[in-house]
Length: 556
Image (cartoon, rainbow, N blue to C red; front, side, top):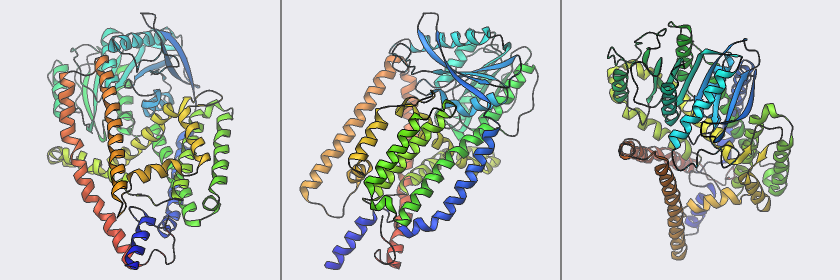
């Protein structure tokens, strides 16, 4: 009986997946090599794209409504530049298309994108409740007018590119402003004519959840006079503005195609062809997506490497958690005050990285973690995407050769989007000025950790951990707590759905598409995850049989 109780307590100390210190220490050399390799790649790529200036401007549309736009201007540009207007989805920050933006700027193009949240209530388009499409179309027209009025821009070489709902905006702006030379719609379909918008490229990821290739082929067929639907075939004439093509990037889904390398090289080729009036060669390499990918890996491997050092070494952060918390918080707050506007993104990302390290180390002092849950969840979703595209592999077997590249670009695209791009606007009200302005989430998390190290992630873990045995009263309270969390999530979802309906984004077609996407992509990952989860569980069992947790190592 005592031995059984000891085994239960050992499993609780190890956590859900039973990773112990010796496994971290084994991984430390590999993590250090991966960190250094990613750092070298990121530094080398940055040297070729760092020559630009980012600035914010305030414009007014035809209704007099103010909004903010972000201008990326190359420092060593020619006297007359090409200009690209990037239309990201409505709820996305200006950096949502950063892979494209930096690549265009690196090639000497002026780039303008939208800050849909703005700095004031009047500038905010995300919370606008009516006429959103009409208002954002007026905003796009105002940006195009600004671009065409600049003396350093060649008006005959102006293009539009947009993703998802931003692609709808780009198409509409290209139709309403027929002088725009080229338009690229990424991951979206729309109603167009054979002539407008001029020089139109339909670009979609092979694994796009919302736009199947058969649908995009029908869209392509309807958009050109020759009735051609085959992907990769250019119809029409660039000089006359009637060029049309459907392109597919085999390494992206809907959520990563705007940061994808294949998207960048195809976009550069299309704009060069439209501006020259004849087909241009496709570049073999786009530096900016590689920079963003390696940049994300630097932070990931660096975090894991430092964390493994703390876990394996049991140093002063483990012995003196409050001192470690105060020291780390002081360094993070110092980064806020460093006057370096050119490195605003880096400072903001370093603060997010350091905050994640602080939360992780403090939580590791309290209990183990299910370290495989996140990668297994990602792998489950990745396999779901592949399974749904099996028919295309049967028709075109060479597509399967891109599966390793798809895994790389999908993982790094999600890392960059959900570790940096979207969290920046949630944690900082301004991250481009001389002094950063962190929002209440950053200050609140730091205050909680300084008051009680480990409380943030420790509370989350206690919420989801399921002990082997628990009293009936504790089980009942845990059930009510779970129901409260589920109710809060459904309430938030209802509010978002109501807001999108008021904005005009929810109709019968959108609801049908949502149901179809849920059936295809939201159910299968859970079954795949359940199967994959057995592997680390069996590995844990075999590891436990090979040695006792108390011999030679201590659980996290």
